[in-house]
Each structure stands twice: as C-alpha cells, then as structure tokens.
Length: 110
Image 1 (spheres, rainbow, N blue to C red):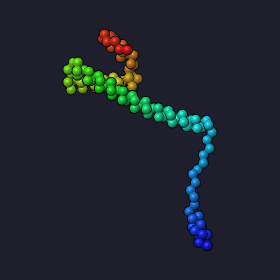
Image 2 (image 1 turned 135 degrees about the vertical axis):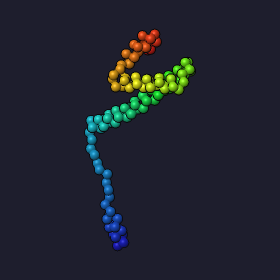
Image 3 (image 1 turned 30 degrees about the vertical axis):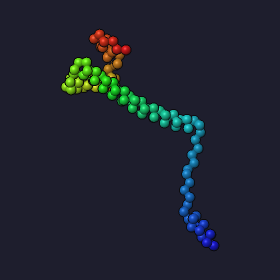
C-alpha cells in the first residue's frame, strides 16, 4: 500500500506541460524574416558607428600629422565635421553636394 500512497502524493503536484503552438510555413517564414531584419538593422548600425569613428580618427590624426594642428584647431574641425554629418543624417545636406564643394576647392573625392 505504500506504493499507492507514494503515487498519490506524487500525483498531487500537477505536471506543468509546455503549451503547443501550431504555425504554418508562411507564419514561420514571416517570423524568421522579421527577426532577420531586426538583427540586420542592429548589425548595420553597429558597423556604421565603427566605420564612422575610424574615419573620424584617421582624418583627425592625418590633420595633426600633416598640418600640425593642435587640440584647439582639431576640436574646431571635429565640431564642424559632426555638424556636417548631422546635417546629412537629417536630410538637410546631401553627400553629393559636399563632394561638389570639395571638387570646387580642387580636391577630387571619389
């Protein structure tokens, strides 16, 4: 009889079952597509930030090495660079226009 008592005590705690969901192939494909798009946006943002920081650091260092610009001048250049980049991001400026301005100065940017 102890077996019967043990079984009853074991059955007193209900077994929690995982819910079952039924999805068709289109639903699974849509979920996968949304997740991939989300991950792609995150990766794109991370990559853009890294490349931008690398370009800015390279540009600032090149200015320092070639012209001898110090902290004050480099800070002013960096402030203007950030302002121009924000204008491009906001849609107020176009990259093509900036390239044309560089060409007018005799600097060919490709």
